[in-house]
Length: 218
Image 1: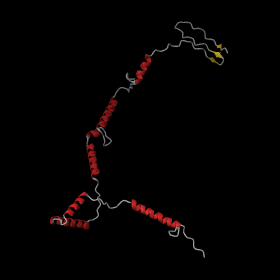
Image 2: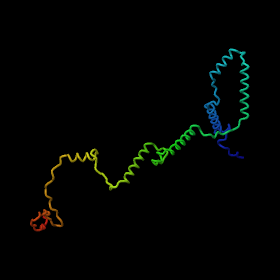
Image 3: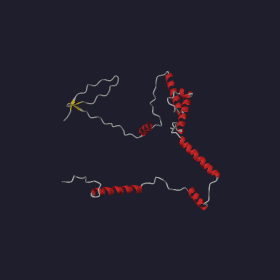
Image 4: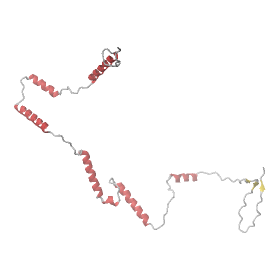
């Protein structure tokens, strides 16, 4: 009778694959144990080392009655506190943010009581003195514009110190070429050439006959 089919990775000493899996698991476990950090610190405080040294020098050393009574009292108090302790949740706000919150509320109350804030129509609590001065200047300009009886005038002249004005003066001061005094050649329009237009007549002069059409030469 044929034996039932077994798992190839069954952890057994007779199975090479299973034996290899066991060895790998043991190596990994040992590696974790060796590389893990200790949970309990073994470092001794210098005062403890000194106390042990002094006690070794005096084998019959014993604490005084006052020190023994103080130790028993402290131990009893600690045991009683641990026994009667109850779980509690501290829901109080942190001191620094709460102090900042109170200062913000105080600043808001003082700002809303400031007549300068309402006179300059402030729209935020962080309304500075500079913003109030700019608002006052704008209100004065608005009032002056409303009381102006003359028509609105716009001064679009360039100042004598602007770059555009200086560039224009430089171009005006440059030497320019003389004008081109050459008559313009007549243009051809559909096989015909029109003579130049006559000059305007002076007052009392006799008009000349109309110019004739001269065909263009091809």
